[in-house]
Image: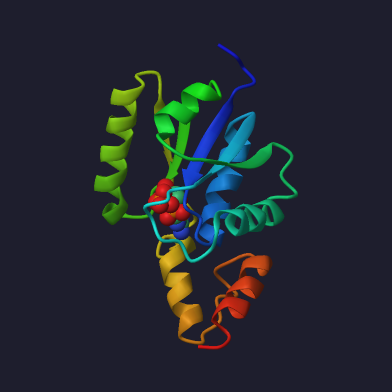
Length: 163
Ligand code: ADP
């Protein structure tokens, strides 16, 4: 086995939150290299464009030596094969995440039997946090300051200023 492999943390990150960063921190302590893989899914409507989500994640993770931010399109199982990785990281907040995540993990294993999905739980204070909730707060004129990195807070302010 290549001991220098990368574990992949995929997601929409629309936008990145402190919950995502909590998972990235935990993963970066466990694995030699982490690729945060931003989904470029044309069928999904995103608030932030792919390049914006990548830039926000790169800014938020610049102090991690073993974290790289990339993007992918198409099937995650194919992407893992392409980059020769077999470890997927996902965050599990609550029971409500479980069914979807369980289904995804089994489906990815069906598509590529080498893939193992590792679930990490964030600090308790982030278990209620989601990108959609953060956007909702910003849209309604509230401050997302305690929930997101500084660069995301500024971007949310800019985006929803005129509403
Ligand atoms: P996706 O569309 O792939 O679910 P998200 O950006 O919503 O993309 O989530 C990416 C991953 O991060 C998922 O595994 C999700 O469960 C996890 N995640 C999202 N928010 C949090 C949080 N507050 N704490 C821990 N994990 C989280």
